[in-house]
Length: 161
Length: 175
Image 1 (cartoon, rainbow over the protein chains, first blue to last red):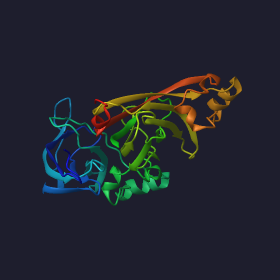
Image 2 (image 1 turned 135 degrees about the horizontal axis):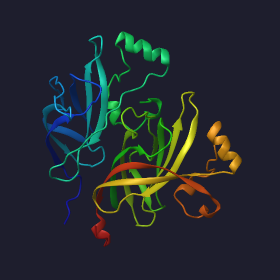
Image 3 (image 1 turned 60 degrees about the horizontal axis):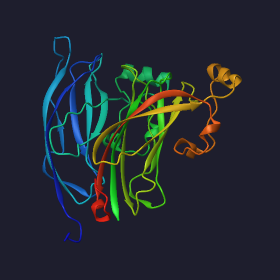
Image 4 (image 1 turned 90 degrees about the vertical axis):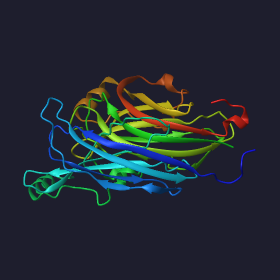
């Protein structure tokens, strides 16, 4: 007989942010955080992290390697709001300021086992040419005040990338 | 009631002649289906590819349906539009695909089409922009009036959709 009422299940996520390919940029670091629905709560592990700064490798593939560990366990009663991992990558620009180089998000895989995910990254675009030049010059690129908006479905039409 | 969770992303689009694309999407279901949580339709951001030709949206989809019957299995319908530097929008393609019916993660490639008009309208579209659009959005996912249309191919929209099914065995459906 199936038990009445909500049943709790655990989701354990182990892994790493392995590496990145950014053809135009170097000396980057990444931050990750998790976005999840109301029925989810983290029970163990770190919900956010900041990696080291890494430089490109000298060989042909020019990979930026972080090998940055991810370790978290969630508990939930409902698959709705399945956690997403949001990654933001930052690096220095020509003038030495720290600017955002990309945001990306992906759902944590559903099935147990080993998975590899490659996430495309995008940056918010300035709306006018003047703002584009000013932001390049002053080192203040458009960025999201809260990177978690990258994982949400509503309101995206107002933010070109 | 059996439950279906559709969790995934509209990853992006390739093969369109225009860059700066966005996608309006929606999920259509039959009368026996009820949406318990999630947003049934939305619009992605406008993305301009910098590296390569794929426009990436990574738009999350998280839907929780309850259903009394298999008829009207959810269909995801898409409209891809391009936006130019003046802010005008032009239709790039319509497409639809059924949400998969086996649990697990699926990679879907949804091909799109756009209506061609008369030769005058095609010439105007090439020079000035614009072009014919469908009056009723349900032609995208239904076959009823398609015979009236003459269309051309658009690009492909890539989706990664994961499916979780619950309580279907109570109703004699094996999955």
